[in-house]
Amino acid sequence: MQVTNSTWFWLLLLVSAVTSGLLYSYSTKMLTNINLGEISDNSCNEFEVKCSYLLRSTCLNKKIILKRMISVTNYTPNLEEHSPWNRKPCNLSVAHAVQKHDHFKNKFNFSIPVLLWDRLFSRELWNQLDQRDPPYGWQGLSYEVIVSTLNLLNTPTNAHLFEHTMKQHKSCIRCAVVGNGGILNGSRQGQEIDSHDFIFRVNGAVIKGYEKDVGTKTSFYVFSVNTMKNSLISYRKLGFTSVPQGKDLRYIFIPSNNRDYLMLRSAILGMPVPEGRDKGDQNDQELLKGWLARFSFVWTRPQAYFGPEAAASKFKLLHPDFINYLKESFLKSKLIHTKRGHLYIPTTGALMLLTALHTCDQVSAYGFMTSNYFNFSDHYYEHKKKPVVFYMNHDMPMEAILWRNLHNAGIMHLYQR
Image (cartoon, rainbow, N blue to C red; front, side, top):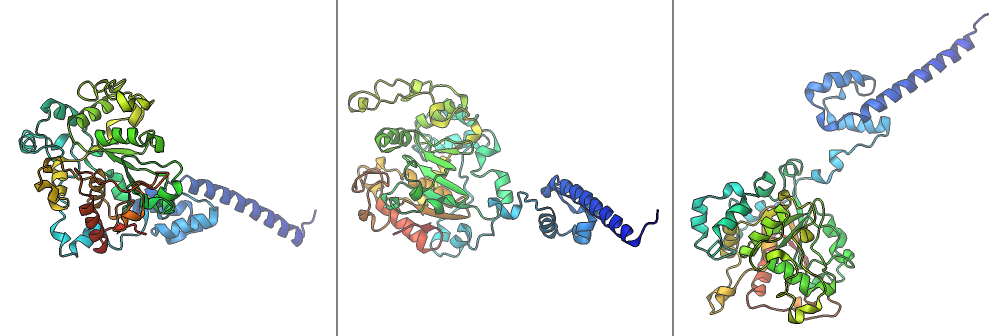
């Protein structure tokens, strides 16, 4: 049988098509299985041989490799450039803005440890902090309770607000610190808040029903046991029925007294609080007496607050030395010099915001007091407008001036309207 030129042409075309299909299938499978993070200069030769028909000498340029992978295989891996951990570097970080400001560069001290954990404890530290009242020290607190609690905070995750891997892969950590001020009601800031890398919330942080105003995400919940329980009582009917929970959520304790250390220890051990005001942390008849009896919920063991998987890695503890530094540098109120000065303590929101300013690269504050606070309700989740309440143990006007000055200095962004 005579094979014509036309027949040879069609046979060659068929072989070419089959070969191309096999090569395409192989390259797609190979590229799909590549761990992009593991491509190194040493592995380039082997990699280049495997896909030389596509990449040739482009192996050393990872970005070009990735672009060609996508264009040839239509495969969309989890690229670093699309990861929230790899946004552009900060145009101006908190630390840089501080150094440029004549006043605040003498106020900030980024070398003071923010968190307290096992390896920072010593007898010398005990002797030092035993001279100051909580939350600035340990005067009047139990040595055994302090030591036994800190012994449980013994991993690097307890030492830093952000885990090491986060800092490695993120050139600019952007944080939203969300207070509970009425200015957020109708603000429609929820999407912007959630766009940040980390979101801090405090005390009675109601989310359900206010997602468009305050967002949905929570990375850190900041509290003392006193403010947490008071919030569960005071704002229960307004929607704060439980403490935020989540697999990736972390809890930041403000150690205001012995009960914070006891609660933290019990939460990690998965047992009821063994002593003190929160003993048993269940069926507290004293707490439920009188006007509190109208609340139907009953205290349960700490897992009910923080979830069933409340491992030590979920908890952070603000260092009393750090809290004392914040008071001396930023929050030294004139109230201290009055006859009720011993009652003065910075607000939980103030400690939360200043913690973020000492750990994040960029900070935006929402729901904090502004100069026109009287235009808004006390909290964003109140159904009817209520005037802002000023407590004798806080100096909220002083804090409001501080937020305004930090905003004007370009050190943080303060949401205003």
